Amino acid sequence: MMSIQPILEINALSLAAKSKERLVNNVSFSLSKGESLGLVGESGSGKSLTLRAILGLLPNGVEQTGGTIKSDVSSAMVFQDPRGALDPLCMVVNQLAEVVYYRQKVSRKASRMIALELLERLGLPDSLKKKDRYPSQLSGGQCQRVVIALALACKPGILLCDEPTTALDVTVQRQIIETITNLQQELGFAMVFVTHNLAIAANLCSRLCVMKQGQIVEHGATLDILQNPSDPYTQMLIDSVLPLPELEGSRDSWN
Amino acid sequence: MTSGLKRIWNTPSLLVGLIMFAALILLTVFIPYISPYDPSEQNLSAFLQPPSAEHWLGTDQLGRDLFTRLIYAARTDLKIMVLAEIIPFCIGVFLGMLAGYYGKWIDTVITLLSDTLIAFPFYLIVIIVAFASGAGERGIYITFILVGWIVFARVVRGLSASFRNQEWVASAQTLGLPGVKIILRHLLPNVLPQAVVVLMTDMIGLLVAIVTLGYLGIGITPPTPDWGTMISDGQPFITTAWWLSAVPGFAVVYTGIALSLLGDGLADIWRKK
Image (tube, rainbow over all chains, first blue to last red; front, side, top):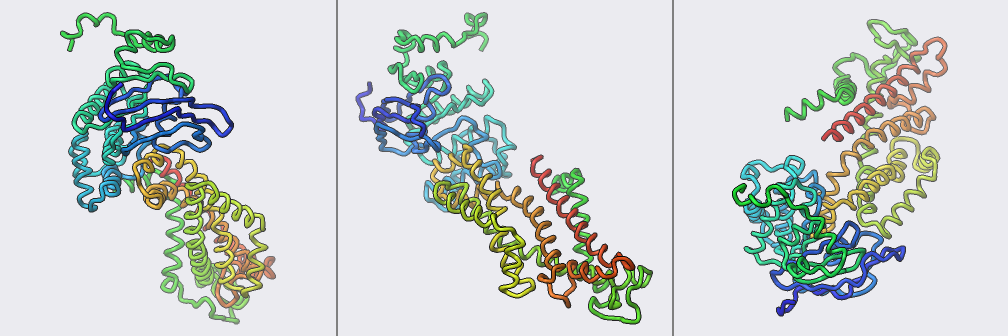
């Protein structure tokens, strides 16, 4: 555990559907400034719900039945499906400028400048400056960069990433993850990264929580968990990561 | 812009609907220059004439030129049709968005209200209002403000509720945009295309209602030309001069086809996008 005072503390969080079905059970973790925590687990294990609970954005019919969420800083979310997370009928620079305008309390003109700077920083093409585009005119990776820009426009203390790379091509996944890592070093936000891809989580996060059926089955430093998994499910996750057999030895020269 | 024109060109239903509707509008605008006759000018020496070069569609029992009256009647009916839809359309879209977006008690109240009002037959309400406020345009406007919004509210409510569950709405909320802003800036553009398609269909129903009321004698009052009164005026002569009733009836059908093709075409074009 880190010794610094946590900026996010979740204590025995329980979520249940209105039909009394338990969805998330007794989940606790904490996050310090600048730290990144990976939440890994299968679909339906309650990872995304936990994130939504942090944002106070539980879907209809789901309630918090116990536990506390304490957070001193603002958080913003990067969604799984980048196209779905953008208004299809609103041009992207406008969409971003609008959020900048409301969150950073600057003038309309300044908000547009800040929006364009943010987009440039995230590696979107310069042509957006001249001609704004609709989300449908951008690629999936570009859309996800816009979504990240939207989240960063809120100047979040914690960036919540809900499987931000799952809907993308593998090559684009890599670029997006590099972008996120660079931005984190630059801006120093903490991050909760939800994924079912252990390889990504292990690369990105210093600590991991393995979730299964609404519960945390294992929790600790990434290296410890990878080296001595105590839960059979964690072992299964580790075994599910496929190496590239023929190229394993010659990887350096191949790059 | 050119791509927009190309899309219209590639959607035959929209193209045909536009041409049909535009032709009608052009006729109503330019009728004073096309026809030498006055719509209410009587000429009792030339009554019930069959179509001829002089009177394209013949004359009615008072010797008035049928074609001229038909187009002037289109002016009246189409004007009421469009004007009567404006307020209900705005109210319906707005209430529908509120109900769909906020849900909970707002949704319950709006749904309850629309379900209650929809239980009354439309014509019953029109007749009551027409008797209370006197026959004429006013009864139609009042009735339509009372019940016309429901169809829009229902469609828009369903759409808004489904958009509400999409991530971009959740995303806009988490990013801290105010609710009013989300509704007007993001929800409205997304529900508007569907609402406009419904508007086209609804206008046909309203036109038929206006004509029916005129026919029954509780709509537009006689000196003003109107398709409904024209149909009922021609009724006694149906065996000798059938076109007196048939032509205004055909005009209603023509407008209905034009509007539904327009609505269909718009729906097509927006779906393709």
